[in-house]
Image (cartoon, rainbow, N blue to C red; front, side, top):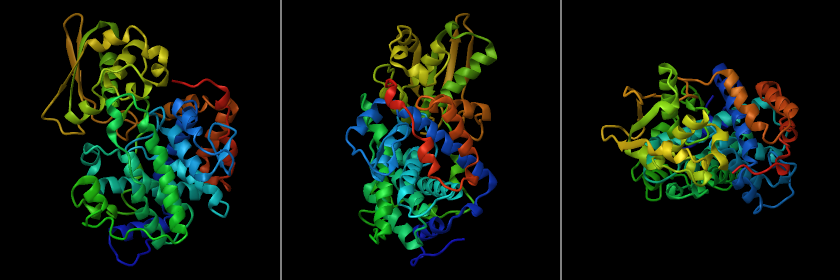
Length: 464
């Protein structure tokens, strides 16, 4: 299956994999999971077309072109479409996680924006294989860069840094670029890698841009590579200016770029998000849910809540925030308070009315957060509840809902899609899109998606 590229290093083997990967190579479970993540990303993006970030981004792009702005009747250029659709997919923190971090919001906007420039009719099978290639490359780059904790721990947001390479690989596969051009697309994408965690310290909306810029940058890298623009051949070597030295301050582990290609499918480790908040909050929400369900207690009976967590999670999600939407979605205390007060940590609980509910601050005031020095950066938090009768219970959920260990049920996946897509589409259009994605391997022309992703978000109020 793999076509070697002169040089024979890990990036060469990875490029050969991207160039030759076809639908027929994919295991059945990978195909099924890919369709789920495509639908999930489209749902998140259609909802995101009602976001303030999406509305703002549209003001700085050009109208007119051949690529659909999802959730609207408008078109724009391919690169602008990748940008704004990527922003909308990540706007409400409901896109998937566990890949480059947010792989769906990076890969899918890029490949769908690339369809008009493919020069041919693209089938659903080809779209699926392109998405798989993108997920594979994005996660492999992150693992080679030391993994999420080491890379993001330095202040980089891997959705923007590694996601750019994921988008480039997906488009290169979609366009059937030869192995050498796939390598150029991936290596050129390193020059567009960016995304800093500086947004975490205030109400900045910058995080939402990272997915869109990665989709746009990856598409641009593939466009340049297709025209013969050469990428830096030693960018994954132990050299000054190399990707790993720059983004991880070490030589990295380049062998992981090509480890178990065609066997360890990285989309298998991607996870869905049932809650409208940073993935770092999800295990604690599940722990709270489990404890309330098992004890039969009501949230009103909680007199205190202790949260023990790693230093990394405290820095990411430890603030008691209920102000701007973007920063509130990064707040673990708010997510737990929302579940207690509104019965959900879904998108509805993050409306401006809910964030300003007078019960929120007192509920967060009952919470005590502390760093546990024995925890590793990616360890999930321990939730300890004390009830009004003095009884105490605790729980740590090692893998949150949406993971392989604690999967969302099919009905819940469909319900999430329908709720989110319905924020921009009419019910019958939601059903048509759901049915098409679920039978995507039988679709003979992906241009149908352009029509099905048209919506009326412009006529509906911004959710903020």
